[in-house]
Amino acid sequence: MSIGNSPEDERPFEDVSEEARPSIGRALQQARIAAGLTVDDVSTATRVRIAIVHAIEADDFAPCGGDVYARGHIRTLAKHVHLDPAPLLAQYDAERGGRPAPTPAAPLFEAERIRPERRGPNWTAAMVAAIVAVIGFVGFTLFKGDSEDASKVSVAEGANPSTGKTASPSADTPKPTDPKPDPTESAIAAAPRDKVTVQVSAVDGRSWISAKDHNGRLLFDGLLKQGQSKTFQDSSKINLVLGDAGAIQLYVNGKKIEDDFQPGAVERLTYTKGDPQVG
Image 1 (tube, rainbow, N blue to C red):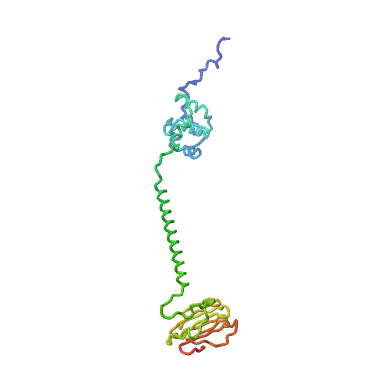
Image 2 (tube, rainbow, N blue to C red):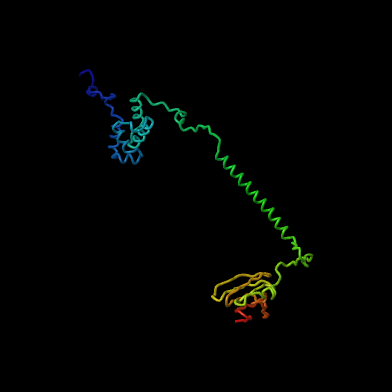
């Protein structure tokens, strides 16, 4: 019986040196192939661009844009192909002189700070304020001038001008309270004889009226309130529709119509030149 190492002890030691360890890219590639995934599958699942996946598997980390992004891509790809990312990250840090120190927050965002700028006078705001002031002054001046003119006109209309010849006999007589007196025959007596003239007055209430000329063209269609009147004129004929004939007083060609219209009655009337004739 021999004394010494057993056959198992005489087997060569497994080479676990740095040189025998696969590179980061090679390890990720082998794990991807073992998982039955393509580069497109990994890129779609991890949202790491295809070009960057190819570069990492070739141990080219320059396209990653820095150590921080490279370490993040290595971690993401390793997890997706079922590898422990910690040894790969340690290997990455060892090959590059240790894990990079965290970047201070102040220098990283210094370029994005908003620094106050020295500004000159805001001439635009000053010009806008000046324009508003000028417009306000002009508007006030116009409003004041209109008020003064209106007061002058009121005084002028209220005065009774004298002509120097004969004083008006009604100078001291108070004006009637109704500014719109009822029409009289003399007020329409000057109607031209070569035309038909019809004046409609609502003296006893309001009434809807409609008036058309000889061509059928609508001259008026609406409500005539009490105290209001309308005058229509045509070369040959006026057609009327009175909604409440009892409230209406008619003057045709300067003559008052004495027809006994009933309240609430609807009348359709036609008047021509000359003496009033109901059609």
